[in-house]
Length: 476
Image (cartoon, rainbow, N blue to C red; front, side):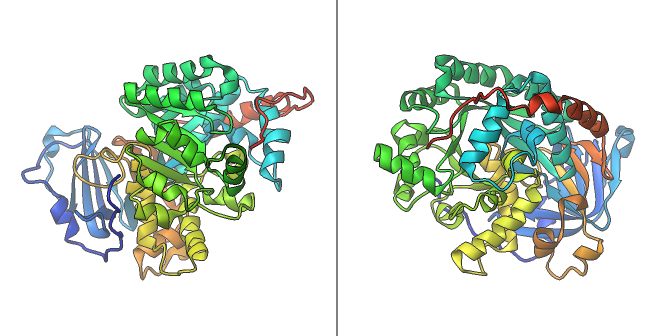
């Protein structure tokens, strides 16, 4: 296990940008962002802000972050794009660490229900109708929503993932994608998940990474979980799985099997792989030493809005996981349960729910919440060395956030303004790999009206439940 991360709770430091400037960098640039305030991490991973910053991007990577103007070899960079970002904050792009992008087609279809009815009476019957075109349109709309909300990367766990990969590539986003499988599919489901992961790994100019995606311990048998762990080790793949989603699942697992879902994962060898656990609100005290003994890189994705909607009695134990050095990334889950793919909201809710749960207003601070939204989320999806901070050598996944609106003024504490006052609609520009995919709120890679028109034409056939089928039964 890694050691616990330091608490990211730094004060504003305009000299931080000078430390981020590597020596001797005066080279052609693809993109220059000027006059922004840049959110940066120091060498202790504490968050600060560089005023009047200039960010230079070359070859899809950040070349420098400096305070004040920087000399750039303009004659050799005639096609350099320049963005004057005065009044805006430059941040690492947000990461949605666990979602089911195509499920935006089911947004609002099953509201005000316990999870058993939600799954059995609505979601799994409707998913029996899914066609590839439905998945494509859902993924397109989801990517549009996330881009407009400042999400540059997402981790997806669903079906027909060849289609989702194609949409991701077209949209310009970054993603970790996994083809979900159940044991009810037999060995074929696991084989298809592996085949997808190997075929799409490092595609879309490296913007797509992949994972193996067993659904959950209650739908995937122990033998399949163990086989998945072995495949992950052989091929160097992340495993993305729902586990201990809520306390009822953990209690039921104990009653039926004498083990918690986390102990099931440990027995299968999955805690010795790189593992992304979705939700984890049912993680118990007895699970903590099990997680502490893990030899793999373990992370948890937390999506608090859905937990509130389902009235779950517990939430992701962020503080206990932090003490174990386990990154907790921010997520939305699918829009069928969350009604939104707004990671900005997840950031604010994480801070608020953690304060309430711990009974401590000093926990989670705004800077800690920003740390979860940036570096911790990048680590959760296996990209901790590539994205998550504005630093030389990192991929240029950058968002520009307008803080000049009446709801964000005056600014006494910029971190608190970003977490508790700013909204996803304040994101003006979204950049992935140095490419602008939304400029001044205009999407440049996706046509939302056309997507919605076609989606609505297909909706009657998609939501028909008269056939009485389900892809699974929810019985934990």
